[in-house]
Image (cartoon, rainbow over all chains, first blue to last red; front, side, top):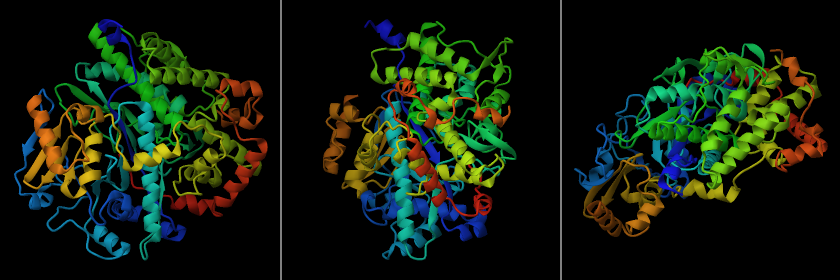
Length: 559
Length: 63
């Protein structure tokens, strides 16, 4: 393939990741009714502290790797990485890390004393952790596990493929389950139930965000223009489904997306109110001269693996099309500007028959399926057909659009909202319920319950009613092992092998407390620190720390 | 759009024909018996008082 041709061929490969805020409640129904949302911050801290401090697979009991927000002045060095001598003596490094200087995440209290939990049983450690508001940890799979607002959040490690994203996202569900188990076993500590959903149906929403690294050269206005029609319509394929219309579910019925009714603007910076379809937050955790991080808040939490796979895979391809358009000056994506994207997002979500049309800026009226089909065809024509994952995404995209066109209910094993609706319809028929019946709202909520034996999606999966893409062994391995394709490999590898010498880490920084002093490693390109990069530079995170530091120094010098 | 239209022809996966199975890449659906078992199981895990359950599911907003 010639360089020009290769340049033009789109693939799903890109640095990306998923963050999930879990719904959090007392498992005990009476306590749940009594506490309301008032205990959600405490429960979130217990969830985060239990896994970070007490899970044996995460290393020494009572110790965690603290989160490092990185530097206010991002590294712009073209090499993309550097190794600095840390200012503090290694014994003081733990206390030098500022866990709480980013005001938007306000729950990690300023730290003044030692950060290792006291001796004692699980309940003692958890009491200490909640009293000190321990709300942040970096796990050995490279993830950030923390309290965001009033929810436990799992920020999965960075990956470069959609399938990898499914694996690390599923690993987050297992981590959530394990934390519930630890809390259930601790005496005198509330039992917690976690839900992988996006709304309580009473006006509160919490997000499942996607992040994509995008070439800075693509003008943001062009990204917005291209993504609005794509995001307004992709829910037909990747929506999680929801009982109730309106932010409070005030109107009975079923809709495709759990987030659509919470989106109020086309584009903007906010994420907790006046939420936009395209979010402008741009903290690339990487070289800001080369990269933008596209932060996507419009998507649903997905339990169905193929939904996650296609959500990431198709969005990455749309972004690849934009990057290629920018480089070649030739248009790839269809011109489908919507007259009113926010209204279209909702109208499409509110019609499970998928027959609703939405008005385009040029006056045409199209269905969501037609708009998705136009994207698929344009991207397929420019895609790298030899790339296995790209082919898999395009094939599945076409198959699902075909099924949805024939009859949406035919896609019940592959599209999450259809799987949920199909279950609801059968339940509704059996008991003769109309859409305002609280039992249907309950089925919707229990669909995403992550407690073993309680979640209805899990029951569908166990019954073979929905498909899977990845195996349980692969997911189990991703709970404790970082992906190899990005700097998560070096971050997670160093934490796994040298937890006591890694006081803190962040997306683009790792602090190492070596025998001869502290070091701060900065990685301003998420692909640096991958297994391939480490091998090229002779860096094996499992070597003794001096050897690792020597290899890192050589890598810096050689760059 | 009326929610009645959800009951339009096509039905649930229980009514799927062998031809449809090929279209979906050979993925198998739960049999009718399996579906009934599943609904029984769902009835057994759901809380008895749906109204209380739904009312007590209250969260603070997030991002």
